[in-house]
Amino acid sequence: MTEALRCQDLYRFFRAGDEETLALRGVSLQVARGETVAVVGPSGSGKSTLLGCLAGLDEPAGGAVTIGGEQISHRPEPLRAKIRSRRLGILLQSGNLLAHLDVRDNIRLAQAAAGRKPSRSPESLLEEVGLSGRGRAIPTELSGGELARAGLAVALSNEPDVLLADEPTGELDGQTEQVVLELIRSGARRGQGVLLVTHSAVVMRIADRVIELHDGRIVA
Ligand SMILES: Nc1ncnc2c1ncn2[C@@H]1O[C@H](COP(=O)(O)OP(=O)(O)OP(=O)(O)O)[C@@H](O)[C@H]1O
Image 1 (cartoon, rainbow, N blue to C red):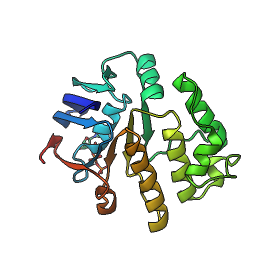
Image 2: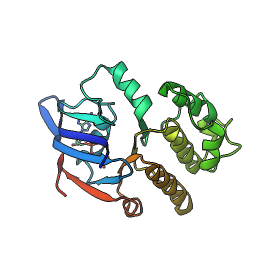
Image 3: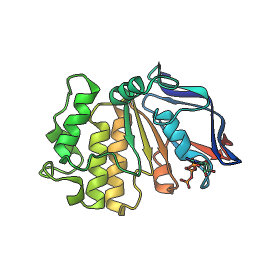
Image 4: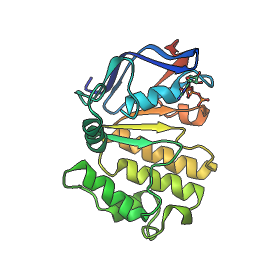
């Protein structure tokens, strides 16, 4: 098994006044290249916190995260940002498109940040997600389904080792959901490791493995 993503013994605490929340309590997992893993669990179980730590957007208090063998945790932010740009595709619910750039320039920017010659043009990525001709649209001009597909085109534009996604099909209609899931599957077939946080049974069905979080721990 070639490893795409690994985290070892992750801990993350939040303190608000006298209250301390243990959001992650020793989470360890691996995702192989070509493998799709779904992370499920009740509200407040730590899924978003885990995703933030895996993406290097948040720092765990303890434990380590490696992406494609390269450690991203406990590194200075500029280095984490570089690893993110080169190795990760990230789809958060807050969206991954810059509002003032059109879709094509969002893709170009992600490709430039990856720091290597892209093997695919923005036009071919847009065609793959069914958005040919929409490259000049800015995010507010897109429908919810178009936005999800554009977000995926950006997340995949740097040919990441790992795709991390939070509820990738959110509020999408059934047909768009299938398009987005097929795109994620084709990324995995090309060798990406995929980790999806989801409540959706439809999304879970494309996963090779399902990991269940409860109170910051993996319970299954
Ligand atoms: N910035 C923060 N400050 C304080 N507590 C936080 C913060 N972020 C998360 N938490 C707490 O950490 C725990 C895990 O939260 P997290 O958002 O990771 O859960 P989740 O499984 O993603 O939930 P949901 O499914 O509702 O999105 C919760 O108890 C939450 O209240």
